Image 1 (cartoon, helix red, strand yellow):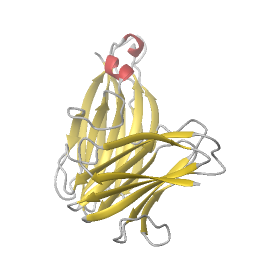
Image 2 (image 1 turned 180 degrees about the vertical axis):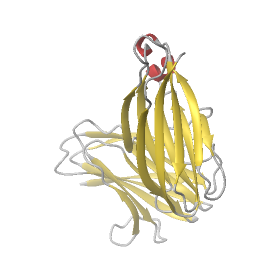
Image 3 (image 1 turned 120 degrees about the vertical axis):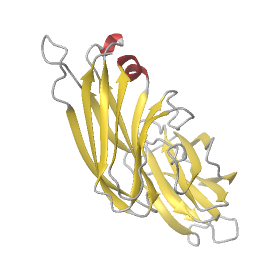
Length: 276
């Protein structure tokens, strides 16, 4: 049983630190040591886990000696999702040193387990471009199919999804992954209008729509295609057309993120067929 240690150094906002590696029967866990100089949201995305395997991720604060000690360093957050689902943490931390620990979940996993870990530190009170920039598929909306009324170009009743959640210092972002299918999307024609509203806020939270063009599960420059960032507890909303060709080749995410304070929220998303 061997622990592999990685020294990340100072965590940055962009580009995130990224490492693709493996665990097996001998190398059973990996520990990543990193630091931040300012109050930050630390963002961790454990993904691309081998099919049929399972790994989990834990966040600890360093007790000051620079060495990871399971029984002495304070555990701050965990993500223990089943099978090879993405595990993620978005957690507010003060300046200091920290550890991220990746562990193979036994007995669910035997032999070699491949994974990728992304790590970033985003600023507090972020703009739409500065919010947590990792895209775990933590909340799967699924595939939404839209249509026109028979023999017309009139959109059928929109497909609507209502969800709820919370964001705050212990979970600064919720990331929803979805696919949408429009009429004639197989040929790249037509498209979908996506409308999202964020209500029921008791503190300030914002929302944005992300088009992951290279499939790396990182928000790269230019991939935020719509957002709503009103102040205080104002309801947030946006509406955006996405063409059928883009729906075929890109991944899409709606992200709700903390601006300040702790708040629950209600998220309503509707998908309407539209001519390309």
